[in-house]
Image (cartoon, rainbow, N blue to C red; front, top):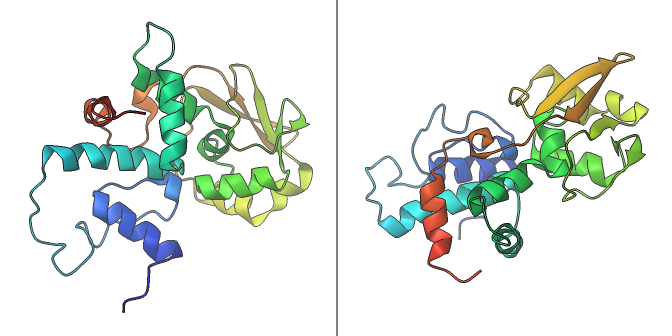
Amino acid sequence: MAKKATGKVARFKIQRRLGTELPGLGKPGALARKPYPPGENGNKRRKYSDYALRLEEKQKIRLHYGVREKQLRRFIRDAKKGIGADWTRKLINRMEKRLDNVVFRLGFASSIRAARQLISHGHVLVNDKRLDISSAVLNSGDKISLKEKAYEAQIFLQAKQSPRLDVPDYLKKDEDAGKDVGQVVGEPSLEHVPFSFDAGLFTEYYAARKV
């Protein structure tokens, strides 16, 4: 029996299966050498049903942001409350403003998983106060920094040496006394999703399901 893929191999296979690099997983280059799904039939042309196309868009969001299906459905229920803005836009706004994603997008960690490690160990400060809840949703004007020793941690130094993404325009990163400090300065939307994403297919997937 084949062993279940773990760690780096699993993250590569996930991205190859979806045909999309998901920056939140870290480990860039999943599609560089093998731009087709894993498995013995991976390099053969695949036929996609409408359901499969919608499912893949859902999987991209869930896997990139590192949330379980139950969590994602709860976030969708919250995004559907009220009237006005399209719920998919509201959902992405929330996902992008989560503390773990903001720490990642500021380049303080090379993946969302690594960002959560910084947060859970108490190394992340929001408005100069420790915040160890990865799912906390930040507000415009919030300042994000690290504890002094975290600027010397391997997680931070590796991310700083090899940035995974450019800092998006809803965030700002400056130096304060030689240390990187970020701030939320705008509202993220669908265009800030850092990979190819069809919001229409994603919306259709959940339109046919009770959340």
